Structure formats: C-alpha cells, structure tokens
Length: 147
Image (cartoon, rainbow, N blue to C red):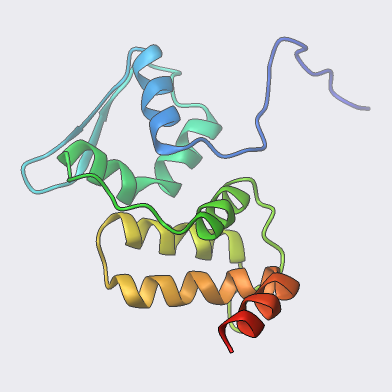
C-alpha cells in the first residue's frame, strides 16, 4: 500500500546556495550566528529545520562561516569553473577523478576552499582537472590553441 503525499509539500532537488539558505532561515524566524571561537549556532523555532535546510547547513558550513565572518569579497573563479560549480550544486557533474567517490561534493568542497582563500593554485588545479574530465572536447581545443 502506498502512502499519500501532501500536494502542497514541495521538494527541491537542487541544493540551496549559502545565500538562499540564510534567506530561508531568516524567513522562518531562525537566527544563525558565530560564536567567539568561530562555531555556528542556530536559534530556530521548533519544526523550522526541514531535511533540505539541515542538508544545506551541512553542505555549506564553511561558506556560511565565511559569510558570517564578513570575509572580504571572494575573487571570482574563471567562468568555466563557475559553471562547473553550478553543475555540482545541481548534482550534474558526472566524470570524476580517480579515487573520488562523489564528484559533485568534491567540486563544492574545492569551491569552498577557494572561498576560504586556501592555496588558490592548488584549488584551481583540482577544479580544472574535473572540468577537463567533463569537457574533453573543449579542453582539447584549448590545449591545441595553447600549443
């Protein structure tokens, strides 16, 4: 026997961005703050944290900390890599480097490292590796132009 679903209940397959997550929490009357030692705290009315919001908090923890700290503006990634990050947010990156279990989380983690001003050269290299694996024709054309 199947269970009936609530037609007014909506589900989202696309993960929320950190800004969307903060907006949703604010709209629900929740408050996300940083402690003095840099940990996130959440004060939310009972029932506010849906599975989608919980997943967003877990996925974007580092980016949320950076946003709440008021870190300086993050330099933009090259447009190809920004597109790759958007694809990863939608779970659409398919080809992965050897040893990577979930390529979409891998891309998002490296994008978070970029946002947190990690070793930028190393971050770019990891993201370009995934981009080349997922765009072999474009990567080959770029290599031919460079030669």
